[in-house]
Length: 179
Image (cartoon, rainbow, N blue to C red; front, top):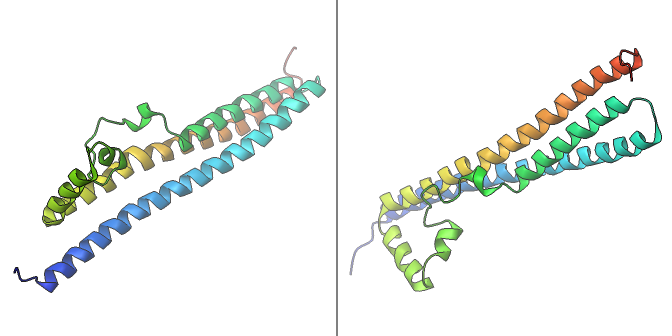
């Protein structure tokens, strides 16, 4: 029977725990981005509905209202894309997947084949580190970062819409437009 070195087991468990916490931290940050995107959707939807209802009631401030509606709609679309990224943004299937990634797990023919792969991985500390690192890298690069970028675009549309509509409001109130 093979003698087990408890110090090696503790080191391996600490390494696995560290990598699991790292992956969980990335997933939590991604959930935060989703929450912020939902807030952007709610705020911009309220603004859009309010502006569209006022647009049909008043003859004044049509350009300003149209600008607000346009930029709030763009912000809604960007926030929705942040929540559910299109495949082209995540570059799915263009990168190596870790053994811990659900689509790769589903590619195995049976649970026994997957168990054999996991046994090989568990017996090799370098492979454990490689697979966990690959999973953390993929979560960061192909999931968190694109979501964060789309949320930023949603905020940019919102802020640009606020600034542009303020300019148009000033121009309309000073009667700088002919129509």
